Length: 351
Image (tube, helix red, strand yellow):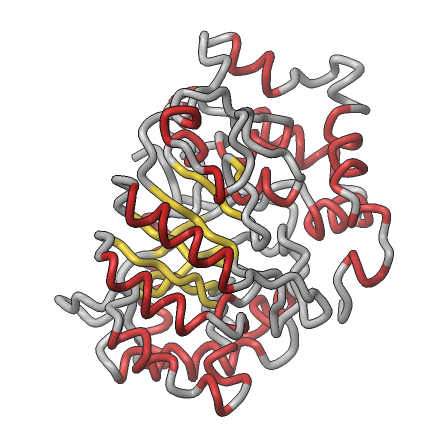
């Protein structure tokens, strides 16, 4: 795939069409329970927002990769980019909330022309955990990005990087030809400036998404396998591995339908539903901000255009009192975050 769904004019580029698929078929017929019905069984409906802990800001959908599972439908042809004006509004909210984590994502967030300015300004605020979600290959994509490891180090950025597998075949299949080699080179460069080393305060974590229509394995066991293979084969070290379940939206939904795996995958998610995971889903302590400043309960809801259930819709009118305690917007994609040990941008949610 070399174009985003949007560029292809694929029907699934429309979030309304995705929601129609998730609301009909096996869920409308009653063959599978809706997510609302499922969480109602354990008296967990409605899901409610708790105290804000994480601000996740999507600074743009532009990316140097076009990955087969991408829920953002990011790519080089996506031009949606956060402006400095919206970044300034975000900075005001960061300064005036008690959120302990700032999480910058994309696309490739580094491709936003104001990315470095935003990092420099946000770093001054002094949040406890300042995350940038990097696809790694951006570090090797162009000479202007070669110094990113040093830039991240200067601002004590916590780097969370996508790494589908420790082998070339599986990685390149999911993310594109040549991605594995560039990712390895980028990880080695991050290690060289101190990231990911034992005892280092420069945090380097990897993210694993399954390459097909199946759920991730045990996070702790997979972390051991990743660490062993990357150390032995490439002398690479990192701190933690986060396993994230692929949600049935955007390009992964397109893959599921094209491969005739959609119904089987939804069965897998529903059968793996864990009510204990519902208590810790990321939407309850996270606020997701889109490139144009609109507010969502999570990054996935952002991609489905399910805005927060509040009179406050935009970062420019942020009001903590009106947002806290709101009902979380849900649909059947939410099964992905509550299957097995649960899934969030910080990995499993159940020990």
